[in-house]
Image (cartoon, rainbow, N blue to C red; front, side, top):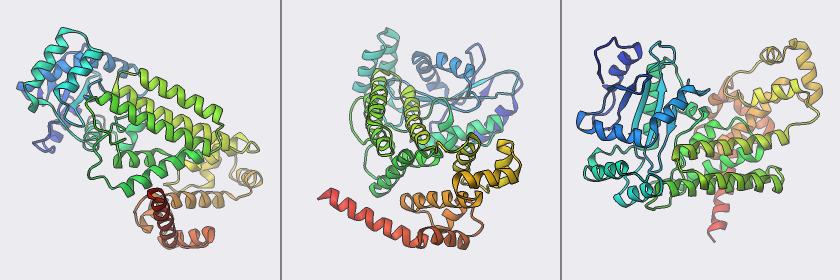
Length: 425
């Protein structure tokens, strides 16, 4: 990164070292902006710099960046988009007095063609500067950076962690105000349809059960299948198609989970209409994430036991969100401000389970989902759910389900194969 004549921040110094680790052939650029919107440093080559920086301005990048800096979740990276499918990521050194903004990108998830670019500009940007920009880009196709969503998201996390000193994961991108365009359709070639089907079923099962610990399942599903594999000239239309299909599936899963058709259909129609009215791919992705979250929490609250006190329901929610760690009665007691003795007695009276029984039961239910929807080993399932040993996990699983995890997986695979054969016939 070429830095102007000023003192480099610690984040910039680390970023210069980090850039040496990126493959030379990857067109992955980082831009540093001062609070007055001046670009004061970039890793973008000089011959490409003007056109790519111009694109950021043409597609309202500075305005979106300003909203990001003022937003409540500026501690996490944010993905912003454009009608033509061009994407950027935003992050900043939050604790530094200079308050520098870093723009990562731009990238396309697939190479656009001239007709696609012109169609979107005609629909959305009727100004001569935009048309001139397209003329210049079409004449220099090698300038356009193309990168898969998976690679881009990992690079974004690496840059953010380097600049801020945080240690977030790709999953944490989904908790930000805007999420990556993970639902943008890609060609179906090379996808393992069996894995896609399993991941999709796991994702919808989270809705049916109102499982608020859904982030990892959603991330896995998106990494396996970014969306409906339609092919077309219009990237914004492709994204909308994927989200509409996604919304329809989630809506029906919510009804299967007990949400009334009146509420589910009305909510789904509202989201679909909002999708149709949207003109920004970054906003579309945030909308898809919000929709999924909304339906899950509606089903979750529907399933919440009305006989549970607020404190006990809060403990149950905490357990659901903490299945990957050791959970102690003392932690739950501290969470709700009770003594450990009082909490365990109250928990048993209201739920019918001791705290340890409830935790174990909930973890086994999550283990069943992992065994059905992933190919990770029994030992890895045990580790992911923080059981003491794989043998203890197998013992707990057998006590609750009557069979071992391995047998459960085989039975689930047979049922899945039979179902798929029925559908194909």
